[in-house]
Image 1 (cartoon, rainbow, N blue to C red):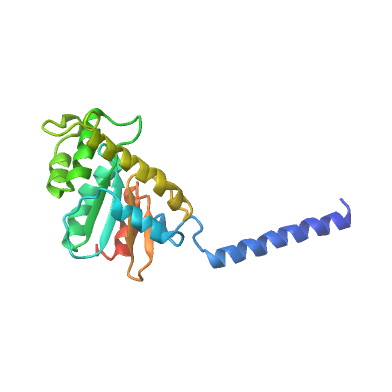
Image 2: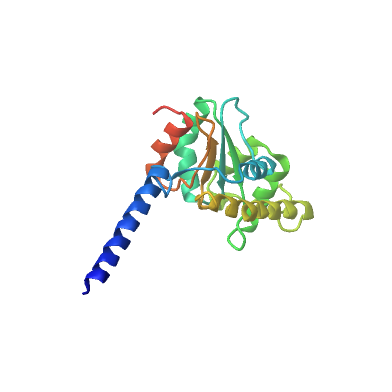
Length: 212
């Protein structure tokens, strides 16, 4: 190999190393902080407006706000709620849950439940629904999420919410998985996590300010 070619290869490698070091200095966790937590810096206003306008339900506690985006049969969402909600509520964190019915992946009963939540915005309705096995829920006594025009429109509004939110989160490096959690940390930064794995919970609790 010619000396000039060796020098060119060495220079290219050195340049890549310098660029990589600079990028690391700017963003030491390019894939998000440990635990998959991302700081949301782009389109914060749009993201918060979408969250606030969605059909969320909560226990209306007076502490920090945690947005949780889920669908009813999501196993990781169910696990997060069972393992984390008690501690979050004891810390006065208002868990604002946004349940959606995925296109082509939801049942008629699930769509009926989602329509009910978005229409009535009632935490007790959410607790009653989630207290029984997924397959046991029939939506009896509720307006159909398929045949009632107003409820069907709310179900579709939930899907549009996901369509609008997903690219905004992606711009911040945060993928839309379930559950997707969004909150503000002690520094006032808007933060998010696709916290599918139990290993992420300790990072999340520390970031939102819950001990243990």
